Length: 256
Image (cartoon, rainbow, N blue to C red):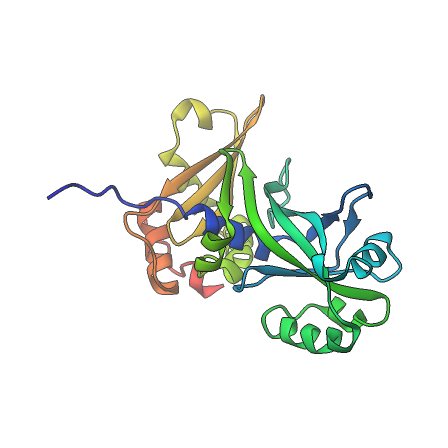
């Protein structure tokens, strides 16, 4: 029977979904125009991204006049770590496709649908100072310190964010603030020469493992420490972190 290597990291499409869910800032770029900041961005399972832009922006006016064909566009999203790091950016995502206007009489209905998955206060501005547009995604690229990877629209449609995506920020802040001992034990998985004189922070947690940010004197390094097996719920995730730490801590990350 052939040996199958264990999965130690999320697939690229899953990483794109998770990074988009984490991203607090995004810029929409259309040909010939300066990028415009968005107040809302939601990558949906159907393969499009719903975006809110200022109603008075040239981008909103241009998209509104493009008719059914839409306009080529790129949405750049920035995923920041929820901790005070020297370099806060964890990853960048570029969603490339065609942006289309949303009819005025359906703006509020679409905003309500978006709010069910993404209850953002800026949705209250739709129809007033902001307008919704849809980016039909053809492809996506995600880049971090390990490099850049691309995925197709169909791969995005078949993927989901990491199941712990919504809770990750609180867990990282909890580890950073209250469990320096656990971070120290996790850091033992790193090469000794990399740890020497460096500050080490928990950068990311997903069902496959923990990523540590090593702030060394000369540069930053992001090192992934995989679990022995993927976590499938909060309890198994807590046990996996404890196992990596090598000395279980009493409360676990699920008791935040």
